[in-house]
Length: 281
Ligand SMILES: [Fe+2]
Ligand SMILES: [Fe+2]
Image (cartoon, rainbow, N blue to C red):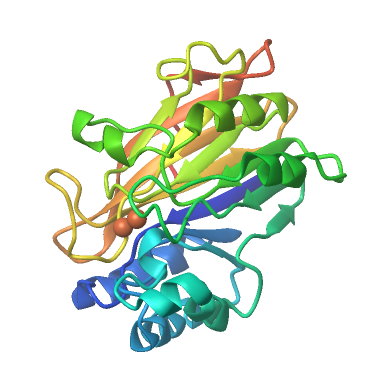
């Protein structure tokens, strides 16, 4: 059975982390053996050099697993105005030694990392829709599953987070549907969430899975959402399936599976939820 396992981590906020959680996260990831680690931004608390250095120690300990890291609003300097205007991504680029946006292809799964941050719009981010369309339309090897990831969320569970949803999300969803995207992943609100797109975007014909990861390491947690990450198992059989398992920190400082949702590609080429989850371990 062809399977790809992605560990979706977000918002570690180096500079504001729960030090005691790092070891448990590394141990859990080591046990789960993901094929790819996706880190959807807010890697640091204030984009300081020392915070990027601490993040580098962490990401190095994840090797040799490939990592796609994307910037969050906290990875752009906030108070240092000249740095914010002139080179907002300097610390991020120094850490990851490559582009702010990149693609990764793993068997028949393609992950496209996008930058939703803006030096001017911290809360809601911003998308250059023309550039996004261009990126997603670029000639590609045929893939079975297309994933798009960026920092700002497309959906949320709590009303208070509506103000944090991506600016321009309706237009972005239209593009994702046209480009036959299967899964859209983000972070930012520190409140893990998975849903099908039909509820928030009923006008979009394609049913897309929208996933948000919580904060994997920071003490900036929300009520009922301790440190967590999402494990995404993609089954590439004839009828593809995608399973989301939320892992929360447990009292033993390890991460344990808490909730699970599973989706199957349906006849309309979108996604439907099915009831039974498999044991992720
Ligand atoms: Fe954050
Ligand atoms: Fe954020």
